[in-house]
Amino acid sequence: MSVTEETTANVTEADLTAFIYREARLLDELRYEEWLSLYAEDAHYWMPAEWQQTDPKLQASLMYEDMLLLRIRVERLSGARTFSQKPKSRAQHLLQAPQVDEIDMAANRFRTWTPFHYAETRGDEFTMYAGWARHEMRLEEGQLKIVLKRVDLVNFDAPMGNIQLFM
Image (cartoon, rainbow, N blue to C red; front, side, top):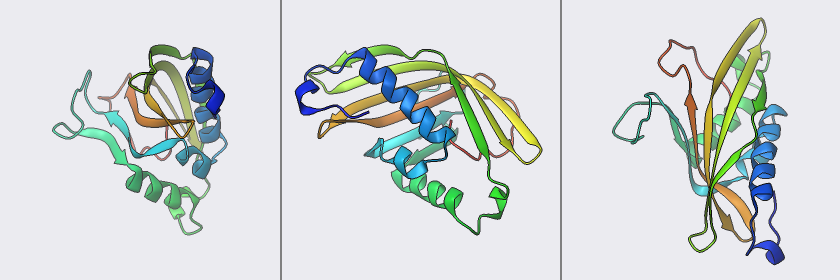
């Protein structure tokens, strides 16, 4: 969601909620380049491997990717020679209403928490996940940008195959 210069001083809960729903829609529609544009250049996408994990660098994670790794994953998902994506994976996010945890205009920090169910399918494989997504955002040139997306799965400790897409 774009935040115009006139509203820069007043990012609302509605702005943040619309941003979260927009991100999920871009993922569901496989619009990965547009999805990447929602992220700040110093952003990270983190999926902890432990309950209430506090450090993505000193503890193992299911995923901890910076923008370079996110771009590589997007290129792989979009590539014609990505045979692990024939047929392509598809996904659907079912989000509860995002809850706004923080709007701090002075610090340029916005945080949300969103419970979700996520379904992913490819060929005859169908996988369901449930969890909570936490977004930390800031304004850059009048646009909300994700600085950190943390996805905590309910069943983080269960054996699972490769996670192909983004939740």
